[in-house]
Image 1 (cartoon, one colour):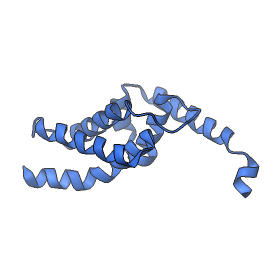
Image 2 (cartoon, one colour):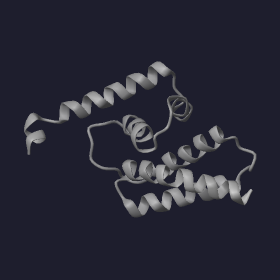
Image 3 (tube, one colour):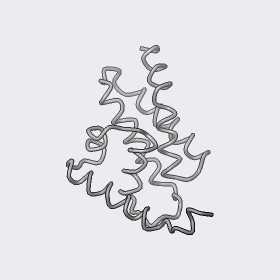
Image 4 (cartoon, helix red, strand yellow):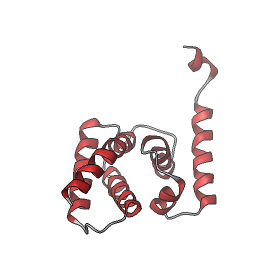
Length: 129
């Protein structure tokens, strides 16, 4: 059991930290959030499948991150979370759909909307600076 926890901690802490940092914009808070998330998950059932563990660790990370003000953005909270799950946590679509409790179409629409907002916010002048 301890070996499985060590393996999961090593495999998922960096990804959960990157996700929490993207959602909060605060390195210290992100470390605290992810440490708390692992503490909570490790006190739960040890019989979780890998997919159940992934969904649980990132759900707790997301929920704890919501209490911390994130970086100023034109994106909605849901759009920020989807981007953090895709690019920072590197989760698969099935995992993200379970976390966000949405359909493939809903996930795709949210991701596309967020990417378009980001693209619109990047001016040609900013790219050459």
